Length: 241
Image 1 (cartoon, one colour):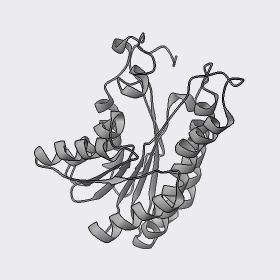
Image 2: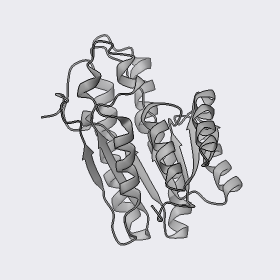
Image 3: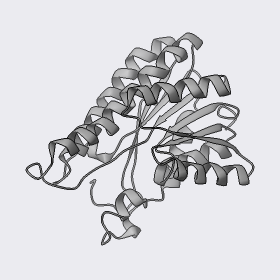
Image 4: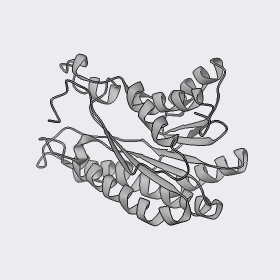
C-alpha cells in the first residue's frame, strides 16, 4: 500500500465497471487518481465519490483511440500533477455478432479502442517513465485472450493482441526500470456483461473490486519484482475451465 501512496495513476475507462473499481481501490491506497473516460460525466461521478470519501481524484475526457486526444491527456496529467507513475489501460468495447454480421466499421472501432488505445497510451508514457527510471503500465486483458467463443471475433483479436503487446512492452521497458503487467480478468458483475446479457447469472461472476484488488497487488510489489501476467477468475464461471 505504501508503494502506491502519493503516486499518480491514470485509469482509462474509469467511468464505470472495473475502471471505476480500480480508481476507488487505488485512491484508497493513497494514489492521486485520474479517471479518464470518453463519457466524462461518468468519470466525474466516480471522482466525486472518491473525493467525498477523502481521496484525491480528478477527471479527463479521453478517447484512447484518438492520438491527439491521448497525447493531450498524458501531457495534461504530467503538467498539472508533475508526474505520471501508473497507467492502467482498461477501456474496452465489444459487439456480439458473428464474423459475417460484423460491420467493418465496428471491427475497426473495437480494435481501435481495445488495442490501438493501449498502444498509443503506452507509447506516450513510456518515454517519460524510461527517463525517470520507474513507472508501471497495467493492461487489463481478458480470458478472451486465452480461449475463444462464438460471436466475439473482434474482441478476441483485440485481447489476444493486447496480451502480446503487454509482453512486448514488458521486454522493452524492463531494462529501464519500468514495469508492465497484464491482468487477465474472468467475467465480472459489470455493465459490460450484465447490460448486454440480461439472462446471465450474476452469481457465476466476480465482483470487479476483486480484480481491482489484484491490480493493487501487482502495483504493490517491491522495486526488484514485476508480475508480467496474472489470471483472476470467478470460482463458478464456465467460460474458463
